[in-house]
Amino acid sequence: MSKIKKALIPAAGLGTRFLPATKTVPKEMLTLVDAPIILYVVEEAIQAGIEDIILIAGRGKYAIEDFFDSSYELEDKLARTGQTHLLDRLNHVRDNANIISIRQKQALGLGHAVLCGAPVLGNDPFAVLLGDEITLSDKKNSSLTSQLCEIYAKTGNTVVSIMPVEERDVSKYGIAEVEKTAEKYFRVKSLVEKPQPTEVQSRWALTGRYVFENEILSVLKEARPTLNGEIQLTDSMNLLAQRSAMWASSFNGVRHDAGDKLGYLKANVELALKNDELGPEFKKYLREVYTRIKE
Ligand code: G1P
Image 1 (cartoon, rainbow, N blue to C red):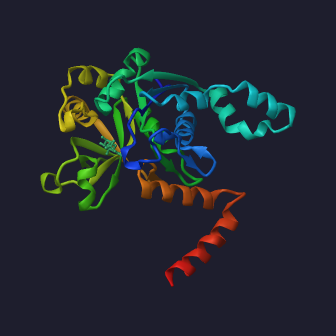
Image 2 (cartoon, protein in one colour):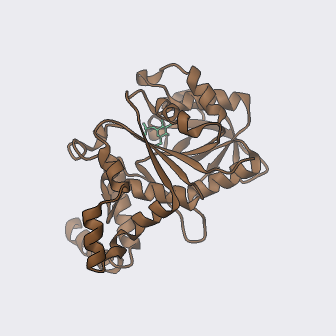
Image 3 (tube, rainbow, N blue to C red):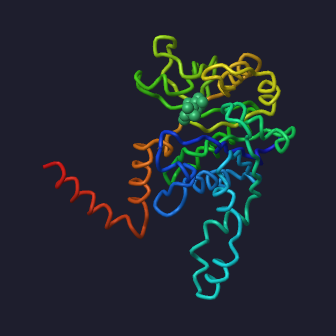
């Protein structure tokens, strides 16, 4: 069974939840402390041993490609002033992964975005990491994508990450009906994209991290648009789950939807508190501002 060496990051969405900020800046380029959201996502993939990262970008998203490219003038200046460490995180990405960019010419949904990666994915299994979500694991545990890759290595089947959600949030997510297994992960029985809470028993939502058998591409090729006139990845996953085993793992770390205003603020606060340089001072400030504003 082949190891997961390729990851696809869909980043073609228009970012309407974050307007006007995202009118000219891709939402994936919004800053979390001192790096754009997309850098955290790419780092999670690299941590899992992934070497080829396929960005599915849309029109007006060239800032993402430029970010991973070199910038001679700036790098030359940093080298001359002894400040090359300021680009350490970016250089780590360049040294460890190939960033490949493909353009999704039409906004036809997440399933279509994944299909756009087919020429580079070939016959290999691959991970999908949604470009506006970040996950943080505690020091003891490996990253969420690493955990999914480990289950794939054991089973050879598609593995998805799930989290419990409140009833009022069911219609915001892909929902998975799952059953317990003797292992730490669940078996997926069926999936449905953004159902009403009355339509499903389950409260387990898909979180935006997946590891797919290559077979998903054949299913997607046959898929037709459904919800919102888009080719829904969840529909094809449901078909795949009926044909072969599919597993779901509940993540014990923290996930933030940084493409959403509240999620973005939470991600910034959490990352700032964990930041060695800013954390202690920021914690003091948060306490102070909380007391002041509460009154
Ligand atoms: C997408 C998926 C959905 C998943 C969600 C996780 O929805 O279609 O199944 O639960 O991401 O964030 P979107 O947030 O793009 O509407």
